Length: 492
Ligand code: NAP
Image (cartoon, rainbow, N blue to C red; front, side, top):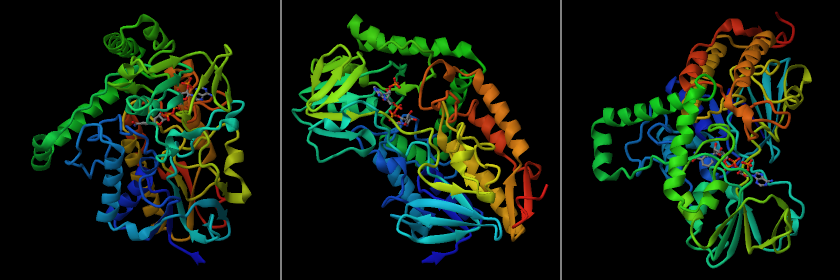
């Protein structure tokens, strides 16, 4: 079956839903959304591990034009965030425009017609004038490359693919990884399990989590006096913007962060050996900052052991560390993160003149303002290369991007038959500037999912969300070639 909407949006997480809301609010409705899963929500649909919730305050981690006075607490749980997105999809009439269980395998640009052919895993084909990818950076779980991984005979799963059928009560559980996901699910499962061994490869700075129950009085206030909720949003925005400055421009903020984190550790962990293991050696911000009030106390419980010796292999019965010790386990949980630097994988994206996106990105993903790639006309990326944040709400970044892309859509609607292609020299200058700033960032001091194998920082934006809003406020036509289809390749 072939259908031909004007705009295809791939993904229905915060990015895809945000794009659809922006278009709808602008009176544009000739779009459809493709979703590989059976519901909206993106990472907030997929990550159902115990304790899953946002560590960015929800009044900030929501669309500016759709404040939610009903958050049960400041750092809302996963199900509530997904409900928020599903509610908006219903409110704005998007549900009828979403094709669920529709995974995109390929997209090809046709120079002659200036249209994209979008192929789905079930064999269906769509043709569209504009494609917006909103597949996110954290949608593909990464398992560690450890010898013997497949030989383990107990239950094993990744945190983003939590197997709720596995009863952890009374079990010996091994957790590999200590990132943002693990610090949430470790305290949630610790009381149930017989024994928990947490394998930490490197320590990360953990800050007190600024969570609080909102309660009925505060919720009523948010509902009846909207400026109160706005003030809450502004307060967190200001704090995040300040912390963002520590990443490149004001390194003097870093010791303040590490001091707060060290005090938090000292208050919560009495054992000097455990404290030493939990003290990071890279500066704060190098790996994503973590927030938790119950992770350190969970690690200090008698049924928990924090193992910092490197893992040599997985055996049929557990995890063997480099010192030869076998840590027996009934269940292994991989909190080992995502293939964050493999943007748009495993989709095959072919642009103008047959160029392949993943060939263009052999040295690392890059895009003009994180949104457009030269040679891939009328293709727009949400949460693309170098738009992730060290501190702050990614929803703010996504809103900047959807506004920018909406301007491109309006321009293309005014010029039927035309395609918009980022100028290579403009993208090159932009990339050089961003990478120059990134060279001075704290992210160079350790390895993380922000950098690819060659060490290039492909994921993160080196500034504040205000800086990104400024950069994306207006689509400047001089940055692009706007040309009739078939001439996109040649026109200067
Ligand atoms: P992550 O931050 O990438 O952490 C992965 C963990 O696995 C790290 O501790 C890493 O160690 C460890 N690891 C990876 N390979 C390993 C190996 N071969 N052997 C031993 N350890 C290994 O993943 P995540 O915790 O799933 O979080 C990913 C991102 O999702 C976060 O940074 C955040 O952006 C987002 N997230 C957000 C929230 C939220 O509340 N907003 C919650 C969860 C996740 P090293 O540190 O040594 O590399």
